[in-house]
Structures are given as C-alpha cells and as structure tokens.
Image (tube, rainbow, N blue to C red; front, side):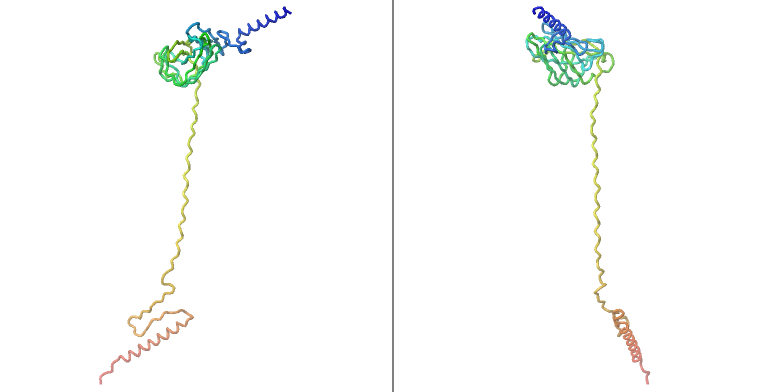
Length: 298
C-alpha cells in the first residue's frame, strides 16, 4: 500500500510540474501563476516583476516578442511592475507613441488587464492630439485612467490589451515620420509619477478603418395642392319693365284728336277697335279741313 501511494504521489507531482510549465495548472485549478508561467496570446510571456519599484513591458509582433516585426492589433503584451508599497493602487496612463515623429496616437484609447499577480482595472479614455512626450510630460488624457494594484509585496503581473483610435499626423519630412512605434506606461500615485517604462520600438500596426455612420437624408414634405374655391353661379336678375308695367300713351305730334291706344294682342278685339278709331280720326280731319276753308268774298 505504501509503495502504491508513493507511486501515485510521484505521478501527480509529475503532472503538476508539466502542467505548471505550460500554464495549464492555473486553468485546471484556478491558481494564480506569476512570472514566465503566464501564457501570452502571442509570442510574449510574462516577465518577472521587479524586486523594488519599477516596471517592465513587452509587446507582441508579427516577428515574435519585441520584434522585429509589425505590432499586433489590438496591441498586446505583458506588464510586470512593483508599485513600491504593499497593496498600493496606482493610476497607469498608457499611451502609444509614433516614431521618429515622437507624436502619440490620439483619440479614444482602451486598455484591458488580465492579471495573475496583484490586480488591474482597465478603462477607456481620450488622449489629446499633439500633447506629451516620453519620459515626460505625460500626454493629456481625459477620462478615468486604468489602475494596477500590487500584492502584499507590491508586485503586479498582467497581460494587457491596447486599442487606439487615430495615428499621429506627420509630414513625412525629416524626422516627422511614422516608421516605428512603442507602448509606454507610467505609474502615478496621487499625481506623482513613480516610474515609467516603454516597450521595444517595433513597426506600427495597421489600424482598422472606421466606417462613417450614414446620416439619414430628410425627405421633403410635399406641399399640398390648394383646392380651388368654386365660383358661385350668379342669380338671374329680372328685367325691369317687361311685366306689370303700363306705358302711358303719348299723343302723336301734330295730329289732333288722335290718341294712341296700346294693342292688347290678338284675340282681344283690339285690332278692329283701333282701325275704327283711325277711320273716325281721318273723317274728322277731313271735316275740319272743309270747315276751315274761307268762303270767297261776295
């Protein structure tokens, strides 16, 4: 029994040793592994944290850890630091510098940490264009900065991921060029810079091209066609003097004894009466003419 138990013990010890060497033990049992036992997503592995205040960085590239080659994007690597005091939390401004122009990538910047020793908190903030230099001053950053917290020895080891928005604008003349790049970090406690570090200079990554958001074009509202107002039909006005009007007869000029009587229409007997009156008038004219002649003198 004792030999069997001893064999089992040596067997499990060998498995544990092999697993720890590849970083698998932490995945199996949830153990926090430090130093070079932390596996990176690229070629880099985590460096050992400094024994005293300090910071060490590396960066993954197409040519391996720290290049030569083009930086991976998102930009990745490891940070190992000693914040100088047990369990101290410090701000960690992170920036990506373009060389040989010595101008920082600017705009929206996002940092994430996955830590195996101590702890870290990522964040998103904005780096102001054309500000800062390395090692100082730190570029102007707007927003909440990432943080790192040391363990009981002040040490912290984390894998980092970094994304940036805009490459610096360069003229391409003289040293104002973008031909290499590097990650830079500062450890800041209550506004005081404790230490800083940068990765090796490597070829700049190709940033993704942002697709502009389409702006909806407003559709013109058609102008309603006015409805024509109908023109009122005029009411016929009766003609005055046609019906119900009696015309006063006017005596014929120069004719005595003749009165014009209106014709009342056929069928009323008016035609015969008028003829009789005319005949009578003519007779009177004849008689008047005779009476009016003077007799010749005797």
